[in-house]
Length: 443
Ligand SMILES: Cc1cc2nc3c(=O)[nH]c(=O)nc-3n(C[C@H](O)[C@H](O)[C@H](O)COP(=O)(O)OP(=O)(O)OC[C@H]3O[C@@H](n4cnc5c(N)ncnc54)[C@H](O)[C@@H]3O)c2cc1C
Image (cartoon, rainbow, N blue to C red; front, side):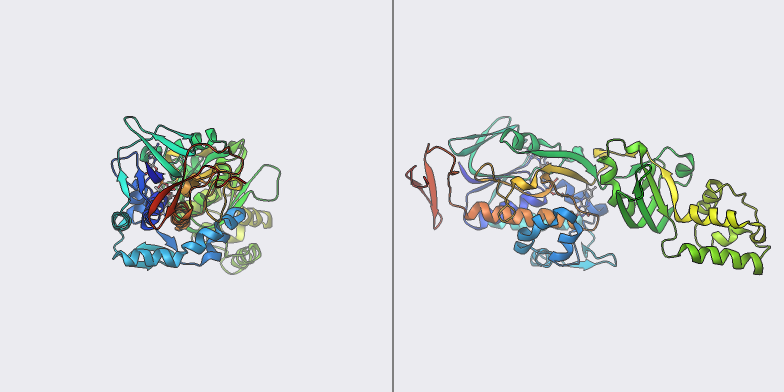
């Protein structure tokens, strides 16, 4: 019998368990894998980008419409507090030019070890190799069932993550349990995932990186993009990757017909269309003999410039003076609005996060407690929350885990107003657990 049971020892679960135990609650953290926090170990190219150099507002803004759900969680543990938490565990951090914060050691292992040290001091118990198969709510408690054992908890925190990288243990188990307890699950979709393209010329550019590209996801016949981003883009043997691509990928995986979408790329976002046209016109007068391709390779890698010429239907040896006005326009518009046909994404296998999950309107953002099931809490990626690249997802997992652990520990056991009095309730006072009469909380 535990005060608080947490299922899933990732970023959210480790902090939730530490927080609950630090407040004197008998706490159990259950993890399916042999090692806890496997995703921390593989994150950020094994360097773990723990958070972003910004404040609460910056994190909320990055989450768009869902951001406001994070206010209370971030107020309980903001990005600065996350950094201080790791410093206190002897893990100094650094801020990179992108605002990403990493351990100075560049070792994700240091991040995992820091969280385990904090958990160890808290007094929480952790059991690894404990894959939970089902949970039940009975007599105002939760029965948590593993293959060989069952545990009983007064409060339950689900931190089982999403469905991405299922090889890490994240196979969406928490969704099914939450659904049986009455929660709505917003359809899980891969996010922060590479995008696939069957276009030969795209695959032909495999290995080329463009540091600054404007990417827009367009539906046929529509002028307003479904999503847009500016940043680095990488051509691969299957299609496209890099931060700008990953950050727009959720609208592709969430679309009913992803193969109907087009990625419209501005390969020179800092060069206005008029500037490029005038530059070409001037070159036709002053450097008429120069091949246009040479001029274009001043802006872009040669392989990309050659691909653009192919798409704009211009031969590679055309000279500046030979280009007609219409051809200049075609070259510039292809460069500024390069259409890349896509087929979809690499799916959950290669998605850094899962979009969708437990519907936010059924969870109290001030505590992370379910609005439907008393003493049930959610934190981390299991929630219908996904942020962009840059440490935002760990920040949300840390903050919601911290708040869920704090709330679960500080709640006295209570019955939901709609529930009939049954069984025995407990009150926690000064570290002691006292049975209380069943009718005490009747309204
Ligand atoms: C390759 C990769 C790189 C990433 N890099 C970054 C980065 O640098 N910065 C960033 O902010 N985000 C990054 N992310 C995203 C980040 O890892 C996640 O958002 C974060 O780990 C979510 O934390 P969580 O605690 O909610 O879930 P998870 O870390 O996924 O933890 C869930 C845990 O629950 C356990 N579990 C699941 N089902 C059961 C069950 N039935 N019984 C027992 N245990 C169970 C799982 O084994 C797992 O340990 C990356 C993700 C990937 C895949």
